[in-house]
Image 1 (cartoon, rainbow, N blue to C red):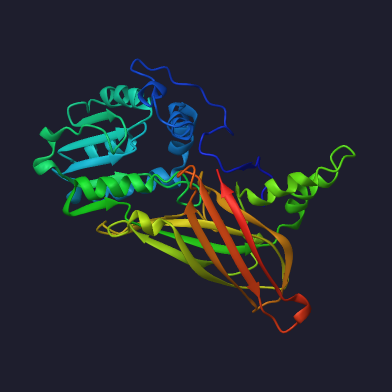
Image 2: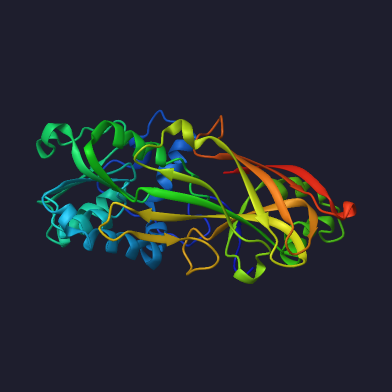
Length: 367
């Protein structure tokens, strides 16, 4: 694993230096009056320009969306497009430049005030309408929506571990309420992958650190360290097993209920080594394109701001080449805060050497 600054998964951009954007309209907090603290924290995190800068500078992410739209101008020409969670408006402007008749961008964050300025600076205010509010509550500009529908939905909804922040629920709401029959979603397919890694030195530093802190036993802190997934960059050489696809979501048909799931996985060891953690990443596909476009957030490809999600195991597993680690991945939104995730991993190593046989269950909270 690269020696990079590491942090537990949070969507609020607290790991980066950010500058609050001053806006002229009501603040996000004012618009969210009456909402619970978790919702306010989530939406206000996107008020800061730093998190948008990080996403825009993620070339894998941004260029994939640009290519999917620009290379399919025949799909976007004269169409009405809905941009869910439009942020600074980059996807809306891609769609407008591709020939969309009208683009509607919706975002709860006050960053949308800056997006309006950006759209105006690029001479697109007559083609793009930007609205601040929740997708589920905002008053849509029906004058731009024949039959109250849109032809295409674009959205960059993916969070850490794909589903952190639960923004996909909002995209599915928009699909069911506003997408015309036969309409298209960009992107429309996502697949979660898992693999196992050797990471003893890093685990000792992260977990073992609590055994002796300036001469004191801080081992009670280990529980928190072991139950919080880590978002970090994993080097490809750390992988001990082949990757395994565990879940594919088709945005044309998936339902919110499908986002709570329990799925099996099997990871075949590539070499004799130790396993200290399991990791997860996701691939994204734009299959509605004339020539499908995809990108990956895995350790085998170019860096993305999503990095990978690391789940440290409580025990160290010893595997030999060709052996298989079987398991089950369970995910569901947290009951108190739907934007957090409760993740459980069960695993079993069945091998000829009974002294190395192992099984276990781990629970994690992504918050």
